[in-house]
Length: 359
Image 1 (cartoon, one colour):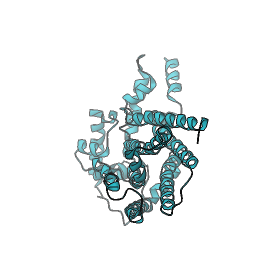
Image 2 (cartoon, rainbow, N blue to C red; image 1 turned 90 degrees about the vertical axis):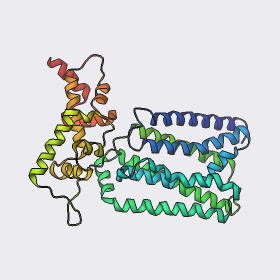
Image 3 (cartoon, rainbow, N blue to C red; image 1 turned 120 degrees about the vertical axis):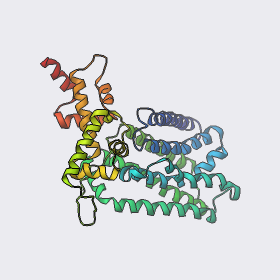
Image 4 (cartoon, one colour; image 1 turned 90 degrees about the horizontal axis):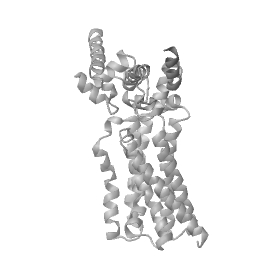
């Protein structure tokens, strides 16, 4: 590739790298980093910048730096862990803690040692790659099978927005894994693809990366809660609280939220609220789901919206509607508008106009 074509690809790569860096920082900004899943997506974006940087260096410097080349050839090792962590964020949030980044240890170890023993791909060097890919494939498949009811609920309740965004992310990672397996297998057989193919596929990867990152920032509230009404059966064990005890705990939950205004903390979790109430997270979850007929985030959104409505009716001129939403504890504009319209039937701006006319 020469002349104008080379310069065009270089410009496109620079644009993708710049936009990707901006979205990476935005995902980790104060406003967005507290949202579940955003740190994982930021890490994913960082890894997917490697092929773009490699392609740009190949065009601009006529060679790929050693560190980038090594990282590119080990990139397949991060796809399984990323998928696992995203699935856990949606279906098993209790497993998300600081230790989750240990899932990237195989990538780090093999990246550090790969060229110490084998500078090129060989059949023997390919074994740990395939083994780790198959391991995470099995783990992720088990999670999807175990949570198929919640996956169905996700489809029914989030319709054409969050559900398809989630499928887009996971399916894209699956396609990247398959693509790397095919490419490396062809390499082992002595089949090499043309540079034009590599550059085109890298641009396609850039497009996927930017779309995934942008939708991650402005997506509907998929990671916060899957409001799945689980049917109790003989296989599900509950604490079966007495009505009087459940009533006392219900009152204490309301008192704790109202007295300390915990709902205004946009990083409030089920565990934090349970500690404030003085019960276990399992017991709190049972009281909410079984006795109060609600979920943790539905309860928080109820209090947050009540607070927002009060602030709208007594709105200081210095505060915008979005400022009020964040002050009330909402994490993002989409959630605030959705919850607001579900309860009032109008948008916040319409509600504010009606209130001002009434005065």
